[in-house]
Amino acid sequence: MNAAAAGPRGHVGDVAYPPRFHREQTPVWLHATAAALGFAAPDLSRPYRWCELGCGSGLTALVAAACNPLGRFTAIDVDPAQIGRARGIAEAAGIGNVEFVAADLREAAAIAAAGDGAPFDFVVSHGLWAWVGDDVREAALAIVRDRLAPGGLAQIGYMSHPGASPLQAAHKLMREAARHAQGDSGQRAVAALGLLRQLADGGAGYFAEHPGAARQLEAMEREAPEYLAHEFLGAHWQPQHAADTLRALAGAGCAFLGSATPLENIDALSVPGALQPMLRAIPPGPLAETVRDLARNQSLRRDLYQRDARPLDAQAHLAALDALVFAALPGAPADAGAGLRLDTRIGPVEGPADWFGPVLRALAGGPQSFAALRRLPPFAQAPGLLNQVLQALSWAGLAHPLRTDDAAAEATAGALSRALPPTPALRLLPAAGTACPEPRR
Image 1 (cartoon, helix red, strand yellow):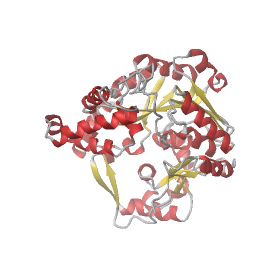
Image 2: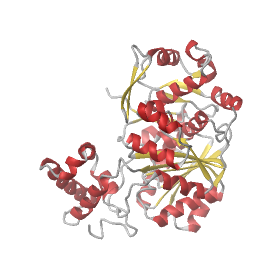
Image 3: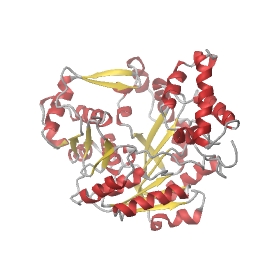
Image 4: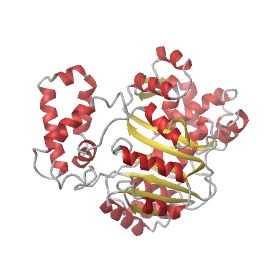
């Protein structure tokens, strides 16, 4: 890879990372997930602060700020061109509660000034932890340690072992092949991917011994060249072990709560049945998460942590759940029919119709509070079951928790919709503080 293709710190600098929206980083989603797990989440009915480390195009920060007017949003990235474009979109849409900062996380003065130096109630990151060197990870940890408020939530998304382990060999080959290719980093990545395809089609032992690698290659071939360049041509990319990440965040004062991917908090829906008794015998923590990763062949984790963890007792937990309000998302069925098929990492799981049907029918009539839904017959004596059903529906993109404040966001969300590029096609949902993919016609 030539000097123009690689930034001075080992990241790809000549092509922009394509826009990606991550619903798991938005305040309403994080609040509801923490409440579902039994922890006191930051109060979203009052002003709060949110920070993203490694924001790329800034799409998640833009959507979150436009749809959550009580929040103050700070988004940081090392690429000044990306930051400049994000600032331009924010200005065009009239979004006044977001700040974009062009800085390396190791630039102490710039980071200390970000967000007016105030504590953050949320610190989120996707596409950073497994793509940078140890020094940048340490800088990210320092931000969490120094700036995350007591009771604040941190969400870290990263490629993980063992699911992403085979990609290490592909990453090395692509970096080496890119040195011999022409064009910008996107073009070089496509050329390097072509060499991987030749190996697969020629019966290379790598693909024979790792059947999942063929599926990963097919997924890579569907991605944009710029995405491939940032994912596989950077100098520092390396999957991370959950146990190491949990211990690193513990050193920054944060306890692991669970996953920001709700289905992964329900072993009955995300771990093979024969392994569930084993997990019940293992105390929560690094070992249990390592077992789960092997059980699921996990390749991407979205960990959720809390500074000075605040577990709720049973009565307070139920009160926190009762305060949540859910709505059906565009395209959600009005019933579960004979059941609801959930395509999980361990294969298809059938959600019973007598659990999912009543909730979908109620949501089809309009938003419903958890308190109202638990009066339905299947859940009258089983609020924990309702909690799991709603987590599964949220994960499946069929339901979403709503904002419970009354601040107006429709006008700003509409302006952002008009200012955003056409790809990816998003429908902003200001009542839910988020966005979802535009339904295909």
